[in-house]
Image (cartoon, rainbow, N blue to C red; front, side, top):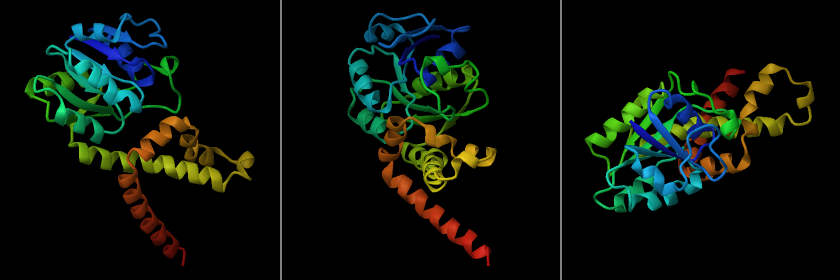
Length: 238
């Protein structure tokens, strides 16, 4: 399979490393693509069977829009952490476009190609989100790519994806931030428990804020459930 990757940070770079031994992989990133074969222009990636958009969240839809007009049958697949805007864009995309939402549930608090590794996705769920422009071939290609990277394809709707992400990614991030604030004056005395619990607070603010603010409704719903659970824990104290 010929794979183009737009964006060679942690996720895009790790995908490239995981796939390049068995697939023809080319990447485009103005910041550089490390030792991954580099495309000169974004549109050069469209010679592939599938183009993975692994840009920062704010650039996902603009990149998809730029690629869609000239995709010529290539499947376009983003790997951003939120899906409603991708699904909405697909609703208005040309009927010939083939667009699938994707999101590997893997990562670290580090960023950039320097943090990429080929085994990042091994055994991890890889959400696949059908859109109005997903046909059987597009979903098959997306699933094959996820499996080739070592992940486990899991099909969900855009709405369900964002609800799940609010609980599994957004809520831990909010909790880590809150706990870091509560323990700020004693954090120099902390053991591994506190450090592990606040690790996500080190997530770069631009990445964390995009995830939380872009999914605010679902994060608020998750926080409401958490408050109820904390009330139960407090009552258990007697």
